[in-house]
Image 1 (cartoon, rainbow, N blue to C red):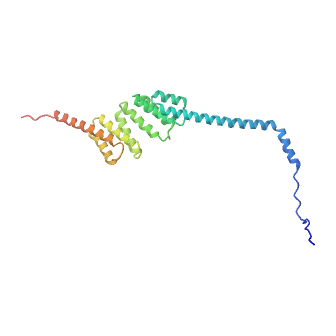
Image 2 (cartoon, one colour):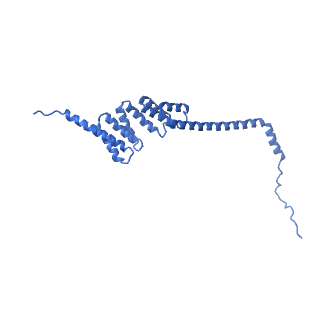
Image 3 (cartoon, rainbow, N blue to C red):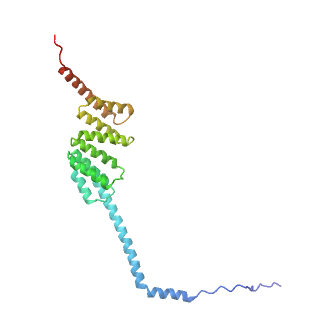
Amino acid sequence: EVIMPGPVPSSQSPVPESNPLAFEDVLHFLKTNYTALAVGAAIIVLVAAGLTTYFMQQRRNAERASQMLLVAQSPKQWEELLEQYPDAKVAPIALLALASSQYGAGAYDQALATYGMFLEKYPRHGMALAAELGKIQCREGRGEIEMAFNGYALFGGMHPDHFLVPQALFGQARCLQIMRRYPEAKVIYEDFIAAHPKSEWVPQAEFALRYLDREIRAQRSVAVTKAPTSQP
């Protein structure tokens, strides 16, 4: 005869059944606080919708600013871009482009101020040194040749491995040319070519050397002409 096992007695108390009052309490809480919960949910929805709209607008603004960045050429166009989208990601580049276009138009005072504004707003930007060099170029353009020469020399000394160093070196050479110190300017170009024979700047250095050779020959010719002749 097979005997089916019966319930095993246990010293532990039986698991209590779920309390139906707990569910009723939840219902009561929801009914009591329905208005507050509904308002809270509405606020969450509104905030989420607002953030979505904000980011979509930011994206549209960034796209428009980028499009303007591609077609802008004149200082006026750069100014319009910066006025419409001052906080766009392309704003720092647009500000640099504005300064560069002002420099290209011969507005050296304005360009100097714009480069200064860039450095004030974006001192840690990856193109900050480009703005520093731009300020030196503006001083050269304004005729402050000795100050520009010293600025170029300081830039090259402080940032010897920066990709803009060739421009600083050539700026030094230009200043020496303006001061009619042709042999010194020639040395800068020759040293650069010797140190960087495959640089993309070599053609510009070679062109400058041809010009300097003519100036040096002319300078020597004038010196010979002015030399006193011996009396018989």
